[in-house]
Image 1: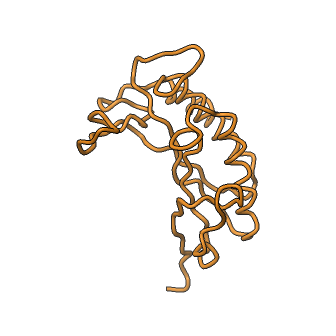
Image 2: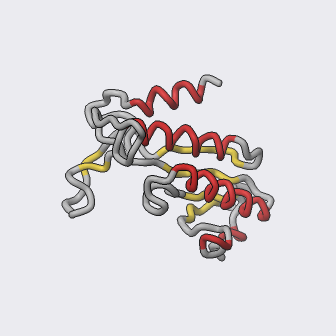
Length: 157
């Protein structure tokens, strides 16, 4: 159906520092990307994550198409706090979301931003995740984490 815009979500970083472009992107009307800088890579380094995301998004601008940041996020175990913020703390998740949200929001060609995920959820058994994916801004039983309040503040601006 040529009347409907087409997109595909890419997890392949675009900028040359990150490995180069996903060759399929040129075929889509909307560029959709999942980025977890500061979580799965450059772990615990939010400032580096901001720079990498900014560079990556700027490189995507060459396609002259709208870009949606379809996934980004960090796990936080409800009730775990750390000062300074560290991975898995509510402070880290909140700061991570706020800073990466701002990077994407400053780009006029980024038309959408989606935090992964709404609430913590059960995962398959493995050694990397004890029982749950904790990237939710709400707990599994729908209590808000610090990040939920951060998002509310960001959305009110």
